[in-house]
Length: 433
Ligand code: ATP
Ligand code: MG
Image 1 (cartoon, rainbow, N blue to C red):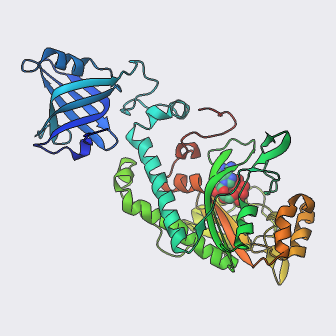
Image 2 (tube, rainbow, N blue to C red):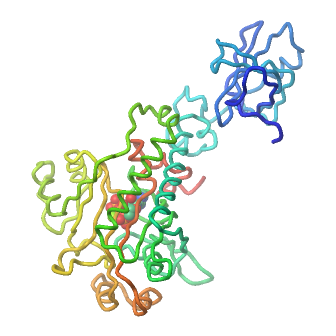
């Protein structure tokens, strides 16, 4: 819009046109105030009824909350105004009326439950707190992309409608593709691996993954954003180094560039993790969990870590940590086993004290072993020929990982529910908006 001034930029002495939403109208009798809110903040507009044109005053005072307004006038210093300045208007226009019955209160004075907020995200993101979450999310994505570039990786985009699934155990969403059965992609795993064998060598992707799991938990979505990395000539240790660097970059970016948002969200001492993330073997992890006595049954080699076990260990460790050297049998077929012990995989998880953030590992790059892995996991290697074939034409050793974008934001901000970190979450109940 031509000649529009953001409310945050209005300085005493300026003549401005501000445009935004009618945040609040306070009619005190002889004087009335209209608070106009835009994406940068708010500004007070003052109406002195005896001194101003009646139509102008009526327009400003009768406007319904959350209507879109445009106000032109002079900016004056006023120490009693919320931002120290106010606009003395000579023109007020209601650009778009808002219904007086609002489904939620964007001033945040009345709390709305999550489902009302998700049904009305447009209004919800007019509140400072919700808006702050998505500004933080954007900064997380910006800073991880920057770090990926510093790590010498190139951003790729791979198909989301695919012929076959990859992650054992998690369910697929079928779709009809010109009369053929296809699926929504669970993970870019196979495609990013195909790219480390290409001339690109080191790649990353930020994109949606689809999991048709029926669970309905505060940390699972049916459509999530995966931050994936894969590099030729990396082993699992180097992949963990890259993972640590990227997660720290996200924290550092937010600490540096989201100070106001952090304040809005109630953080006084937000700090990026500084030390190295501890690396615990799976064996040590189950021993420590067993020693807490928090589980009814002791964990044995080969068990997946139950949520309660993750929490018990997370409380002990108290910071981000890796769990390494998982049993081969509970990691997917594409993860490479240790050369000297077939029972032991190079798979790793990065944990936040409250939940898993990342799974990764070195990959099986030897064609014959890969085919065996498919068979062991009950998958038909022929269905994956587009993938396995490329392992016959010079596939380097490689490693990588996938990081849940929403879990990163959720754990960083201490959100209770992962849905708060997604504009329009997809879960068992929610398919629109
Ligand atoms: P979990 O055991 O916690 O369900 P997973 O081991 O099935 O996760 P992976 O297949 O290892 O998940 O995916 C890598 C990462 O992607 C996870 O560590 C997590 O951060 C994220 N992720 C996976 N599934 C989901 C989901 N349904 N909702 C949100 N994030 C997910
Ligand atoms: Mg995992």
